[in-house]
Image (cartoon, rainbow, N blue to C red; front, side):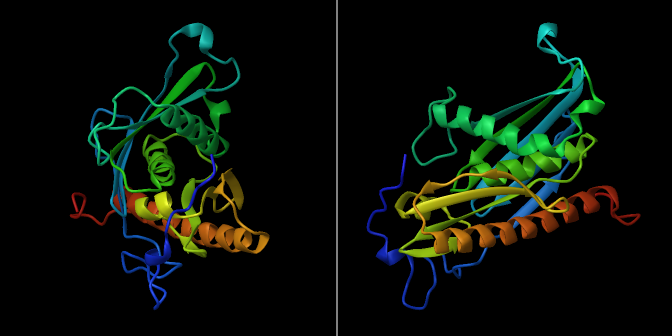
Length: 248
């Protein structure tokens, strides 16, 4: 469903700054932590602006029911879920159509990065739990899930990093927050494998001209590359911390 685009004139001021003080091409603050859940094979936590998201990975493991196993590769199963307290109004804990759709999108975005053929007749389960939502949670969730998969030791061709751009008050902006998402004209989430230089997710909600699309696409790619650097730093900090700083 396309965006209606409400009265968005106040979303960008005369100085070209957005309602949270960011420039048009500026990311929100991002924080990533690795290995935070002891009972998961791999885990990660991300704060992407006001988004707070947990990702956990279990597997590769035996598939239940067994008839769903594939003889030549592992089955990747993803579940994206928003906690009842993650939004302003209490959310119904039952999976919504949007959550089911994002779960599918997340699997399709992550799958190209995984060497699933190395784990035949197994399953890899990825759980993404949104604790607090503030726009762009699918991109933040994909980025956290990729780190959790790496933490689980799953063989990967590359990490998957995601970021969105959009159109607000008739201007292209990077990393749309919740208010901008609701009142803006377009949202363009993208996920990439930076080293392989491959796009694994590209969606568009709303309308952009050819020129706007090109600008938003390039900004989202650059944003995802910045997310990738933070993913790498988090993993390096987890596994290659200097002696004496393992708990830092």
